[in-house]
Image 1 (spheres, rainbow over the protein chains, first blue to last red):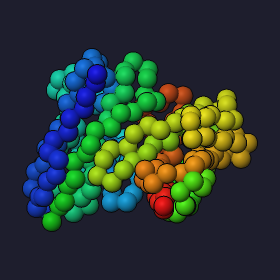
Image 2: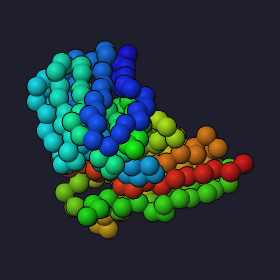
Image 3: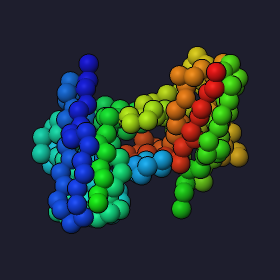
Length: 114
Length: 112
């Protein structure tokens, strides 16, 4: 069975500080990977997606970057946090190839920027 | 510009009643519409989905009704249970694209 693990579970960071969030998928080779952001009580906004190692597509510009250093790992980061970065960050995967329709989400990371 | 809209924002029904959640979209090229269920503090989970070639999709107590001409769809939850209390997101996708667009969500509360 496939499992998705996000870390950390929660973070409290200062404005201007750096950030790195991670996501690992086990039990599935070559998945498509996605980062989503969700404001409290809000919709899910897709940030990035990746269909293979080393390739990441940006969907919106929020002063964030993403990388896929390994087939099963997806990293979200920024060098300088803004207040607007607060929210819930969700990593998701789909079976790969042309399959983007069924997304499986992780439990998310709650980020508070103060 | 919100391409996928949901209403109502929140909905309360009694246990055993049918909850109706609405969704509309703007892009007529959208052809796949999943609904996700999200409990507080967790990631969303795929509940049920429909393709634009169909007008109805059923899975147990959950049914999607789809009207392509009006660009509207609705999720019906029959015999609602307290465990159905969650936020439901309608989403849309075009031609298997990697970009899945979500609506604002409907928060459903089922009271016993």
